[in-house]
Structures are given as C-alpha cells and as structure tokens.
Length: 283
Image (cartoon, rainbow, N blue to C red; front, side, top):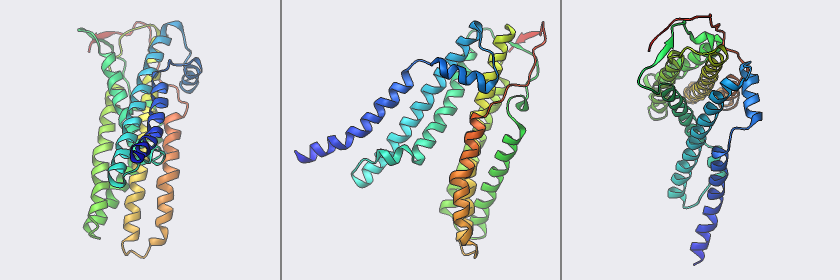
C-alpha cells in the first residue's frame, strides 16, 4: 500500500498543473487581453471586428495550451519510464513544453486559416499582400542567418569532425522545422481576404501580422538554439576553441530566445491600406 500512496502523491502535482492549464485554456478572452492585442497591433476595436479578434485569440490560446500540456505530459512520461518518478516541475520548463507550445502554435495558425475558408464559395480581395507588410524585415533576416549557421555548423561537424549523432539531430531539426514554419507563414500571407468594411479588413490584417510575429519569433528562437548547439559541438570537438562553448550556449539558450520573444510580442501595425471599391474575385 505505501507504494500506491506514493504513486498517488507523485501524480497529484502533474494533475494539479493539468487542471490549471485546462482552466486557462477554456476561460473566456478577457477585455484586458483584447486591449493588449489592440495596442500591439495599433488596431482600433469596433463592434464589427471585435468578434473576429476574440475568436482568433480564443482559438490560438486553446491550441498553444494543448500543445504545451502535451509536451509536458510526453516529456514527463518519458522521464517516469526511465527513472520511475514524475518530474513535472522540470518538464514545465523543459524542451518538451517548448516544442509542444511551438507545435500548438503551428496547428493554431493552420486551424484559424482553415476556419477563414469556410463556405462553398470564397471571395477575396485582389490587393497585393507581402510579408514585409506584416513584420519588420530584420525579423526574417536574422531568422534566415541563424538557420544558415545551424545547418553550416551541423554539416561541418559531420563532414570534417566526424561528430554524427548530435549534429544529425541539429541538421534534421533545422531542415524540418524552419521550412514548415515558412509554409505556414506563406499560407497566412496568401489567405483569401473577403471584401468587407475597412475596420474588419484592418482586423484581418492585424491577425495576420500577429500570427506572423509568433511564427517568426518561434522560428528565430528555435534556429538560435540549434545554431548555438551546433556551434558548441564544433567548438568542443578538438578545435582548441572549447573555452567559447559556454558563450555559444548562453547566446542560444537565453539571448536568442529572448529576441524571439521580442519578435513574437513586439508592437507592429500592418502596413496596408484598403482602397474604396476594391475588386473581388473568386479565391
């Protein structure tokens, strides 16, 4: 019986954390969150566009929290099978939680995108949309540079240093995650935009901008961590520069993720205008 009581006690903390996260996921969008979104996107909220924004905020929160919880559960379950004990406190700030939240964010944007396409006949504004209309150019530039560094470091470690296992993991993650984010971002930019009142169109563009900020911030942080890990492997593999490995780890684990957070949350209004009487076509 003591073993059963011990198991119940160990499971109590993960269960409590799951209940709290589910409560956060299911609660209504507050006025404070709506106003915070409006400030970040420099968007005037009106009765016409408020419903669109609230639905978006509720959808992305549900999927991000679901991904976070799934990541924590999977990581903690793996730890339990290996060590016979729950370590939910460590898994909440571990890589599983980060990866789960990231996957949830991708699914959220995909889900929001599919909701916008509801209906048998879809009309869309023919006004051109570009990535730079929604995010500052330096976000994409820094993300691309970090991606190249991660791939170059992994290839150098594999080809020149013979360090296969960790470098292959870095290479696979970089070649998989960033292109997926790019595909989702392109779909967000190209999503059909039905003709509507200017305030509703402005809200739709604000949602695109916020989605792209989150995607860019996550990708920037991920590529930064991969680049730092890849460089650490190179520096520690007999190059005589191992003393700089802690610096690379610091940049990858703290500085670059912080830049990713700034990219995801920075205020930025969409830079598009909506001419009166814009033509509509079938999407």
